[in-house]
Amino acid sequence: MLLFDKVGATISEGISLVRDREIRLGVTGLSRGGKTALITSLVNNISAFGLKGYEERMPRFPEYTSMGITYGGIAKARDMSVTRFPYGSIMKSLEQDPPVWPESTDGISEIRLEIRYKNSHWYLLGEEQRIFLDIWDYPGEWLMDLMLLDMEYEDFSDKCLERLRVLDGVVPGGDFFKAAAALDWQGELNEDVLHDAVTAYTSWLRNCKEQGFALLIPGRFLLPGELRGAPALEFIPCPVPGAGRDAGSSSLYAVLRERYNYYRDRIVRKFYRECFSRLDRQIVLVDCLKALRGGRETFYDINDSFDTLLKHFSYGSSDFFSRLFFPKIDRVLFAASKADHITNDQHQNLLSLLKSMVLGAMQSVRASGSRAEFVTLSSIRATECRHYKKGDLDTDILVTGYEDDKPYFPGSIPAKWTRADMEFFQKNFDFRSLRPPRLGPDRIIPAMNLDVVLHYILGDKL
Ligand code: GDP
Image (cartoon, rainbow, N blue to C red; front, top):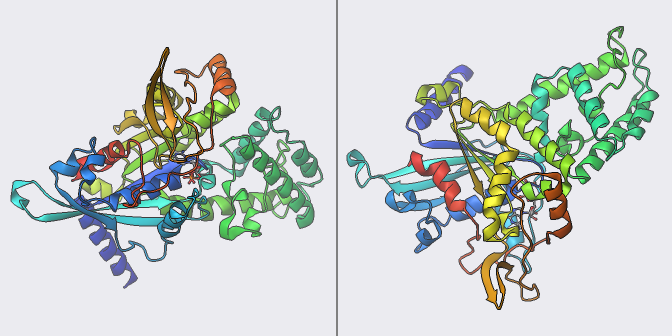
């Protein structure tokens, strides 16, 4: 019976896919990169589809008008066992006075959107069509764990030691090495001594995160979710080269290897299967401004993170049947998020920075036959750009909707990641922590380039 249920589910899923009625969108972004903001804005704006005058907000999503979109909204959940993306509570925080940015999410959630339109194909003329867009949200802290999928405990230990070494000048790892030195790798497990070493390693990860570094593994050490206190999180990388060589089956080394394997096979793999393994399209959010503020180390860290991460997705064009059994991402959109922090005249430079930052990842995406595009994006736009001209002064400036905020010119963005340019940016750019915009009576979230995103993700599927 179970097998029949499974076959039935695959067939009905297959029918939706074969008819191309379902798009599974992955939003990939490091922690605090803007994932929750983008998903919220997509849900909010798609829910405004069909409202009078909405097409004026979508000039670069021509299919909105040409395909006659009539409706958009949240649809019934596809999988009843997955938490629903907390859209309602996020909107509450954005609608309160004054509005506040939503909290980052601490678990997996999903939301399914339905879009209706009048198909213009002659054989369907006048008939209303539907398409579904499924989006997952998950904590960015967990994303880096995907790189563990093809790592043995020894590789994991080597990788962590390399990170500890490289970052030592910025985030010293001395406390971890001291705590780990008290462990007897060939002897029996002592949970208390091990726990001290786990705590020291976790504090080091936390300090790295505070400094803006992204490549932090294992991700659940930073955000354990339902695993808080579980033995599955009581392991550390082994800092003693060759310690595994003579380790017996009941040694500390063997126990830690077993816990690591459990973490990789039962936790990370499940996360991968639930969130990423069946994606059709992907938006990769990159916070270039954060990388600029963080300097060279943060830049290389974010750069490496994306190169390593994107290797774990399958790219390539695929026909209907292979999409069913071997799903592949056929379109990727790299987006420089939070672009409302800069004036319009700086967007070209931000785009150049984005392109050079993800060059390696983009080349491998294209080499496998997928399309890749770039965009600057603000999902929840907190400023507007105006032109200011008085006397000799002729410049773009930013204004917010708050009376006590003065208009300002934040500064220019370099077109290249040179050390001098980054230092100049760090000294001179006025990076403000912007308050979220007050929503108008229509409750539609203002965004920048969301129409470009929708065109790229949905345009060809309508
Ligand atoms: P996540 O951890 O990837 O889900 O990141 P969030 O979407 O929660 O974003 C983290 C923070 O970045 C938010 O709390 C906002 O302060 C800021 N942010 C995200 N998107 C935007 C945007 O479009 N404009 C501005 N000004 N800030 C943003």
